[in-house]
Image 1 (tube, rainbow, N blue to C red):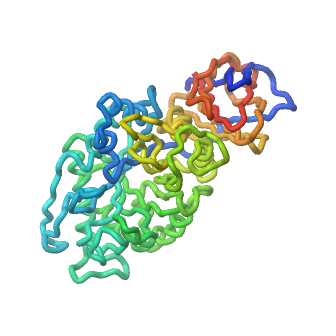
Image 2: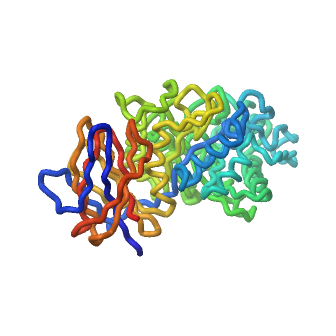
Length: 476
């Protein structure tokens, strides 16, 4: 493998952060990185454009073509922007496109669960199909198609909204019959429509926040009920001949997803055996510990849904929409919860809130500091990378590190304190002369490339990380 390492020389406000390849000193904060100690594989980072948010990108509110290309490049091009590699689509359940509803591919009940469905495919999918095409053209690797709800006629409440259960799961029956197989067919047909149109769905899901009876599309489920359906879906996928991985269950919080694990693990034919990725959200409880599974896990949706859009604040007071807040959320989820993927709610939208990473108000493209915090990871930690051992001696200077498949090592130092920190970094196994490149994000800079330097003996270098800042060091 080819190895390289990273260091920096940079300027922030009135301060000069010097990077020199010198031996460590006991007066410095020490950071040690060991590529020989490896943990989870990384699938990537991303967001959703569900509920017609994809149409925002394509000019629903007047965004000109040049800015449409700009936002697509910012989201998915790793050289120009963040290089997101996961897109989470919403599989629609509505028979209308009013408001921000997502159209169903089977909007009407054909007469019962055993009747031949009347599928409809418009090659548009609320803007999500052309978005997937554009994202794949820029380097997307994973398309996670997830249904918030089954169509209403398949549910106990006969409504895509306001909760309700899938007819036929444990303890939930309907006069119309058992709809589990029909729902599995419906989901697989969605993926087949994409495949036949030249776009691969890689992962398939069937629930969103099943603990919450939302006023919008959603469906309730516990772990046992989810397991009932997973077994049906797995057999249906196998019979279809499509190459699809199954995700479940997008619990509204990490604790909620953990509570579903027992049901997924239970029985003589545990549903967990058919799953590829266990997914949970961060709203009710953050991903701060590993879920009880040996499957990959993703934090598949989380956002600041409380605040007005604050694009230019990396740190002010630790608010829920600040860039440093999200840099910390991502780092903790990767390091402590051992997630393989981390997704924000919306990538780009026309909005006055923090629910998106990029705002498209007034036909402008305005990336937030949250977006740049994501980019500090997604641009340099590519699919297939492995998290590696990384330890800091200073409580306010947190660290994570990853070895990419091409041998390049990306190390993130996050200074969560109000004073600059002098640090000595040692990366075990790297030789002197290897060059490293730093990238800085804080209130003043957005992924600012700084001067690269050569490592000293033992793979060491010294740097100064400014207060309330994040620096990624990449071997080059």
